[in-house]
View 1 (cartoon, one colour):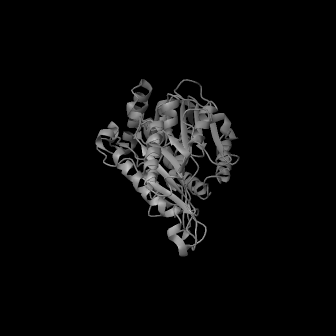
View 2 (cartoon, rainbow, N blue to C red):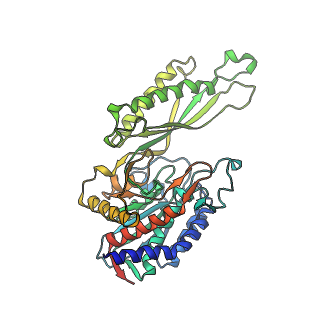
View 3 (cartoon, rainbow, N blue to C red):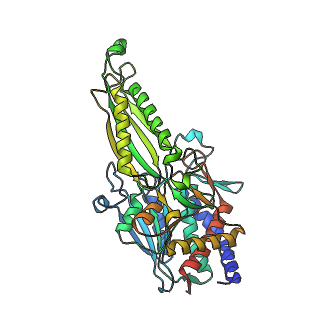
Length: 429
């Protein structure tokens, strides 16, 4: 590919970028929290179909994926969990590619904490605000409009490309797993999660679990004769944080996190309990998220978590005879390190992305080990497919006033279009 060809692709992205911004605003306006993704997926399927892609829209079948490596346990039904994949079939001359992104977003929280309604996207000073604008609907837009830019020039990928819009990324990853179970495979995957135009070299694993505690109810006038289940959670949470500090010790760190003093974060994300302000609470449930390093065994980690909770409970006069119940649900995710993949495919894919990034930015591609997880693990660990995580700059993801920088979205779209052209090859339409 000549420098003239590359310049033409960059200009083609510019030519379609206003439409990309409009698309992102429309997509962000859909409140696609877990269980409510259908309207956004309808929109995505319509857009893919209008472009002539073969659209596959299906409801995830838990029984079909429950036996697969990487499956995360779920609570509740999946009748509302819908994936969408658009397929382009190439001439077979290039290397195939999965363009993956997730449509689900986290809850918006108290609306009065937002400067403007979270699902009424607005643009100010070059940033688009809205829940999911950064995480990661801008990535879905960059994937789609990179292909649009090539079409604008009269080209299409010479190999197969699978555009995936998946659910469940924010809680299990089972949407991406369902794509693997359905047979979607490629020579590489690109996932534009919002990590400021850096290539993710490693990501953590994540465990979600609930701790169910019992208490002894009584009228608050006689509180001393009862056992407060909510207060009993406090020493157990403290014990889990002590475990968190141990797991972060230098001698337990993965090499990609050697200089990161606290990569593994434990979060008490939700707590509920009790029935009445004047009654000692008889029950309490708190939800926990715990990070793990790549290579850290999930079963060993769970055994240590359970031992820590049992030991802490043994110090409590009521819990020592009424042990906490631990329920695993949601993320059951292993860590993944692209840096450990020495295969020719991974080396070549990284090289092509580095070239694309340099052509757009005039600077080398920075690399980053992140303290979160992404769907990249499914491709890298279970499908022998190098998974490149590279997306735009966003701020306040999962927080109030989430925002994505539009010029960064433009650059990522340009780099993605160049990467597709170099990785897949191009045919005239």
